[in-house]
Image (tube, rainbow, N blue to C red; front, side, top):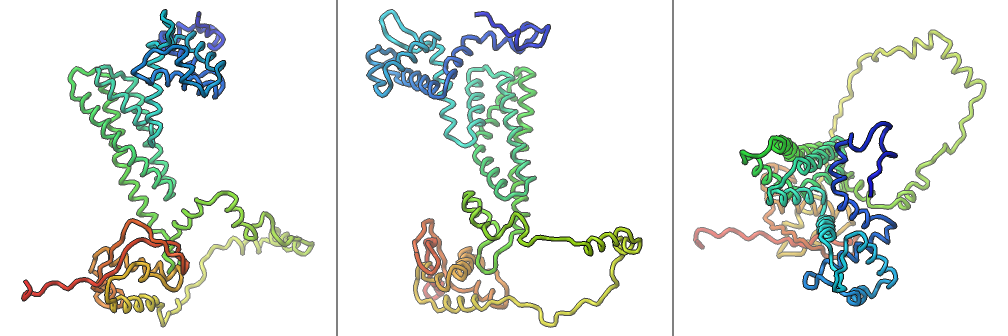
Length: 426
């Protein structure tokens, strides 16, 4: 079949004038194979892929009789199955031998293998980088790496760099955390790509085009390696601006994360009777109001008064005779309870009491003790609390509570710290 591109090219331009078309035209059988697979409705495409994959999946029986295929695909309509088999056979993806048996052609097997690899990586996060790196590893193993294959990897790395820089520039904690998670998921592929580059650059006979792109890939990977430090700096800035809602232990980030988990209907319900599209009271301007505004606009004295930007005269700042002090009554009461703790007790028994906010505050205090840092203030209630002889252990599971505004709490216990053995005992 003649390739007619005259309707798609500019006037006076022929296919021979476009060298980029030559490799695609030379691969017409492969292109026709994928056209056969993916032309038509979505249901037709899925059906062809299903039949082709199942025929090529059984390595022990590479040849199938028509009766065996009908028995294998009993869940398909017989007429539709015959239509699919005929289309695959007519387009050289499926061969029908003289013995009356079906088998995959070489072109069909290559198509099945390519699709299987794509499906394998589609189950992983950021599958594109993994697929491109695995493809390069295979090409390197057979000594057929091309500048085009390296260029695909370089383009993907530059795209990741742009994505990470945009996440940092956004200032959004959620975007930065998601980008950092994406970078962590790609560390294995970045390391594998580094091994491939080291092998290429260590070869003195590597072509110049390949070595040039390999060096640019190395620079792109270096920028990605520095992205993690950028993420941490951005998160530190956000942490410094985080607002804690009273003594509840809940921060503004927790509220934002909770809101992001709600759907549109729930958010709209929150806005009811709180946000108004128009003012509740109509604003009316009469003649007197309009006259006042006109007087300001037309009067030179009024405009000069509005344009005056001089600072007011200095004034003595008021002196606060009694500076505010933090209320540590809950801390002191909790410290006295823990100091009298006779035996180990579960975490929920120690923390619960008074509702969610006091329980969250007590849990945050126990987290300080669990860190094992005795370097607290020398004096005061906070220092005394930090020096309590207690052992606090947290587990990974959640323990249901179901009371006192607490649904569940981390597994753990608080126990008096064992006294060190004396020299007599030693």
